[in-house]
View 1 (spheres, rainbow, N blue to C red):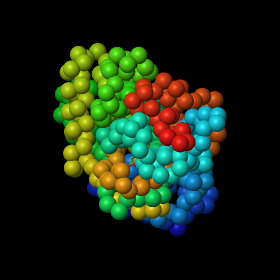
View 2: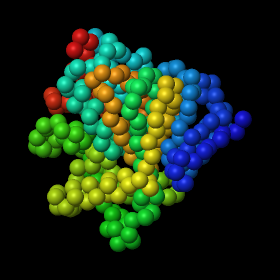
View 3: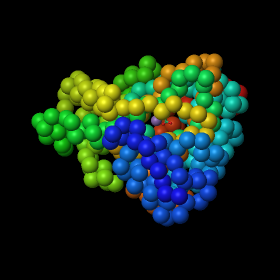
Length: 316
Ligand code: OGA
Ligand code: MN
């Protein structure tokens, strides 16, 4: 059965059906998915029936999957290192009370692109719902290609060669963690062009995120004002929609032409179990190991206030 795509906005987002994602896909089916992704930027797949293993296997069709660092002697909630835990749960599966973990996750409420803070960017993020709250907990998506198209020509010209400087810890500071700027400056920052050509569609897109701290060569205050304005521009109603989740739903978004954020829900009283795979840009399908561990390196130097490692240790 061919893939069916129902648009959500005229140029952005589609509800897709027609493929059984619990089985290995043929090369032709994988192409149908990547074509839909190149066109729509975000695809929503309802009631997939996928397991953790199906999720990882499906994701491998699109490139190398980033791994979450595993430390010896530490217990983890999820069965594969390729699954990022976007839940509000601790290792025992209970709602976390750890202030570091709660503060860390608050950063996901801001509009962002995954891994903008790493040197190697993420193309697709693939998020699968395992448990959802009774109310709220949507995920919002923004179209950074159409938003770019609609910028005035003088702004396009201004942005053409500009480089954004990105830090994971900056987004955590923006979300309220009291991290001094000197501490952020002492840690790794990733440089990425603010505008790039989206490879699959040939359209230009903005590449900005809550992680974007500064614009190279610009006065800090002016750069930060512009970053804020660009994020506000991209997240206007005509470029955005929200996905409301049910268990088994999966959403694929292309971080290179979208932004996203988690929406409010009763974080302290309701469980929300979301698991994500993360495809590294420009890598071959089914690559099992790239011989590096960018997240391990990043989190080994995590500021104490947003210490995601500590939050994951059993018993906390
Ligand atoms: C993510 C993310 C938001 C959400 O998994 O990268 O930002 O709604 N998730 O869970
Ligand atoms: Mn995210």
